[in-house]
Image (cartoon, rainbow, N blue to C red; front, side, top):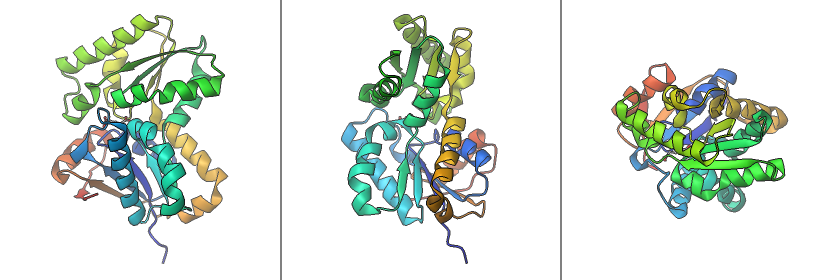
Amino acid sequence: MTKYKPIGIFDSGYGGLTILKEIRKQLPAFDYVYLGDNARTPYGTRSFDVVYQYTLEAVTKLFSMGCELVVLACNTASAKALRTIQQNDLPHLSPNKRVLGVIRPSVEEVVSITRNGHVGVLGTNGTISSLSYVLELNKISGNKLEISQEACPMWVPIVENNEIGTPGADFFVQKNIRNLFSADELIDTVVLGCTHYPLLSETIKKYLPANVFLVEQGSIVARKLADYLNRHPEMELRCSKQGKMHYYTTEQPETFDERASLFIDEVVQSQKIHI
Ligand code: DGL
């Protein structure tokens, strides 16, 4: 019998569902486990040490559930924890397992899209203050881009509290987009550097100037994951393929199921987990 070795998808809450949805579309044969740390969300306002600790706990949990490969479907965790986990923890925790993030794939895409080199990054406080996007964009473009950033601390609570489409959501989205473009009105490409933000994309598009390209991470991360599995057949073979999907949350499963179903177009039945 084939061993159950799902691909782990981790986020602080619901945001990673935007990534999971696209990954399953592009790679439907694999088994997946989604873990939302809803009890401790948001991560975006927390310190480096706390985000690192929470993320390491989640990754360790997913490894113990059979995952050989974990995707941090969270920019804040990718910005603050990924490198340390890859370099310091994996070698003694599970040297053959892998943890991937969402920032590098997004940055590669942004560089190929912008025409005038003026780029805007929207993210949580944590992601923006880590400068991860700025550093990666500079590295990959050879310092050729004009990069402006805007932290949007209210957007994740809006999504987590199901306030999408309300006047309050409009107010904060408009305010942050206005701030970004007053820093640089020439921006032609904006990256949603938080996996929660695509859930607000209707509202975001309302306030974005015409002809600005909006980069959403889901399909990009999915394509890069497919690419990764092609280039690493040893990992591809180790991940089981029965098309199964399991959801776990650190908060109330009933609440998770109700909200998650709105974002992922299917009936979700999650289980509570302690990490
Ligand atoms: N979805 C997460 C991200 O991509 C973070 C949300 C949060 O917990 O603040 O950054």
